[in-house]
Image 1 (tube, one colour):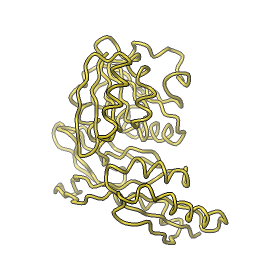
Image 2 (cartoon, one colour; image 1 turned 120 degrees about the vertical axis):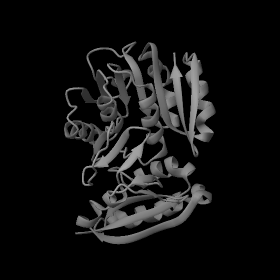
Image 3 (tube, helix red, strand yellow; image 1 turned 60 degrees about the vertical axis):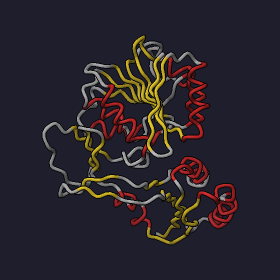
Length: 304
């Protein structure tokens, strides 16, 4: 069965906006292929120098609405024209090809001092002290290639204390939850409003043999909280790799979930959103706040 593959490349600062736009036409997910540092299967380091991030979606070729959707998408790209590096392309591929096409872009990747991200279909021989996270993201966000995920993993490794209670808000593939469990968290609660993300997190927790430490549910903070126990004051570390808009919306709930000495790692924020997110967190009661940067992306370390 044939389908249409739509691909476009943009500057890093436009990834979030472009992904949001593409999801209107492909709600099942968007493939994001940013530049990254990788360890190949033989142990060598390969640096992919590219200032463009490529996004792909797939649409059914036999659907009468597809042609209209593609034309509407081309028109909708207008406001982002200045950040487009390679224009939108449309090609025909076989379903069996595109369903797994994204896998070829993911390699074994070292993040921080100890964490190694290993796609489930790659080979890697771990070294002394390595924390190997085996990952199959499926259709959920979180492969370790994106700057925001890398920053979260690096800061998680810095902040992590054995036995800590962790909350992962918007868990995606479960990459942060699994890494926290492998770094000796006492317990990890992982939540996401996307059913595909909940499934991916559970599968990846099982693949890494940490299911007993990672409790995963469909939901979010606030009225969508899924667990019987209220979140207030329960977590030593809150992981929130979200977006600038959602960070502003959940600022109060993120802080409320922390223990007295806890910290929230808040990311998914582009540089121009940093000030508004900082203001929202300060207004919600943050007493200490530090910023980390990777290109145009920001991570905030927040304490109440």
